[in-house]
Amino acid sequence: MSFLCHLECALCGEQYDPDQLWNLCPQCARPLLARYDLQAARQRLNRSSIAESDSTLWRYSPLLPIRDPRHVMTLGEGWTPLIHASRLGATLGFDNLFVKDEGLNPTGSFKARGLSVAVSRAHELGVHTVSIPSAGNAAGAMSAYAAQAGMEAHVYMPRDVPSAFLAECRAMGAAVTLVDGVITDCGRLASEHVREFGWFDMSTLKEPYRLEGKKTMGYELAEQMDWSLPDVILYPTGGGTGLIGMWKAFAEMEALGWIGSQRPRMVTVQAEGCAPMVRAFHAGKPFAEPWENPSTIADGLRVPAAVGDFLILRTLYESGGTALSVPDDTLRQAAEQLGAAEGIFACPEGAATLTAFQQLHRQGWIRPDETVVLFITGSGLKYTHLWA
Ligand SMILES: *Cc1c(COP(=O)(O)O)cnc(C)c1O
Image (cartoon, rainbow, N blue to C red):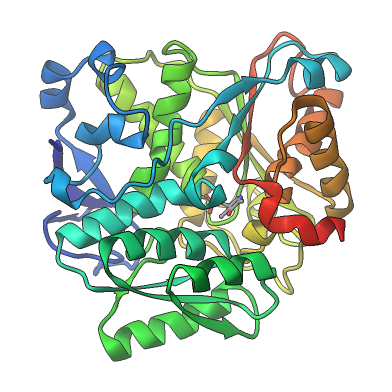
């Protein structure tokens, strides 16, 4: 079922046995990446066989890490619509504007992709109790898949997390701990408890498989665009797993012979009140400094430090992309623009990509004949407090 062959450290290159449980690289404490035997996969898979598979991200299961399908935990995640936003595009003088609507995933965000795959793989490797620090959406997604797997779930969220996220986790039976501070503070307490109680740590990029779930956004985009890719992708970046995952998917698909060497310019969008990647990108740095006093209404972007910072920055540099931050007071209006023109109710993180698009279009960085995809990473339904 899976062509998984080893794990490889993204920084030092050390290889590890993929059929054991790992978190960060034991040598250098950086993320481990799943590697597949793509030569063998190229012989045995083709694009048209994928088209006959499930309408979920599990259509790509040979390129996912689960060996035995009995361990797959699924609620119908992935295969979300790619919508041609022609009315919105017309108001902006732009023909080829597309929206990938991740709000249709189980639990209302693309976090379902990563946690469906990571919880499934943890189940396969014998894990009983999982733990996660989260700004909200990842906690809800992990709670859902842990419930389906019959695992015990512990989630750590900021004390000021919007109530919808809290309600969701509680309704799915997770043990919720509220922490004074932001996601990095949640991460500190969660990792203390992981060490003390022997639970498995599901922090993003601190285990290898959430990335594998999120990379399926890249596979889907290519398949939905008839095995081509857009010129530009705008992605609201917190920990960066979605951006890094798509970039990994493009490389895998080229090795499989499914796409050519053309790549989109990847754009990181952050909030002005928390923009560590934007600052590091414009300084030409390989790693990012933590952001002081992070603040934004886009909860998923309130990430002052990311363990995969160097992978985000590497992707932006290699793709010829860019990074920009947008003010919070534009997000509600951007969500209303998307809603009124296209009928899509976007989370503020997703809405930020529309503000960023308008800025880049105005500056001429995006040209009128290009094809652009905005990632609406989640639904607005957990953020109705912004309209209260
Ligand atoms: C987590 C989250 C993000 C940031 O995603 P990363 O892949 O961690 O950068 C963006 N939008 C929403 C809605 C999120 O929940």
